[in-house]
Image (cartoon, rainbow, N blue to C red; front, side, top):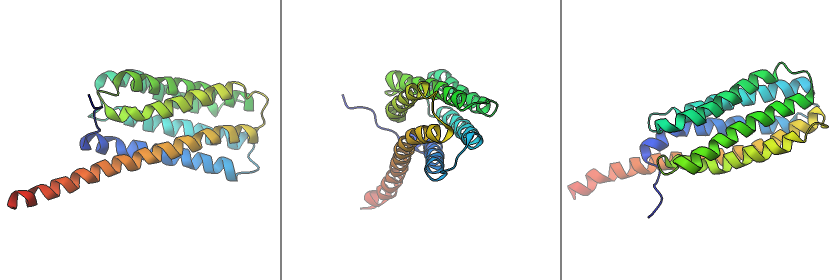
Length: 197
């Protein structure tokens, strides 16, 4: 039996949060690459902003009308915990704790994404994309658990390396959803012509 395909309605629903999540990850990755003299304050505020904004877009992704209601509990919990971890990052006073809080955020959100992939991708095909984002989140969380000896610049680079993967994959997924929307519009435009012929 072939796997269900993402419908045009589902693609339209999820395009914006997926694409904007990718742009958020890309912005963080570029900051981590080009801000050579990043200190603890830069790390804290940029990581906080990334986690909060990513949590918001994860929330928007799962509350779209076409997403199954049973997916909203676990995924929304992961999004909410990531958002709260981002807020907490502003108030910590050491580089090590920034890393540990980020590790917690990536772990809970990654596990939530792996859960919806494993249990609900048949009901909501866009969840197939959560295999990669969930796996990257969990791997990054494990790496961050051993980041206690890093300085601000090193930790910025480690998180930035993970966000590069997020950015590439989410932007590709976003453009894929955009293509699915346009393909349906083209089919709809051709249908009246075929009837007239």
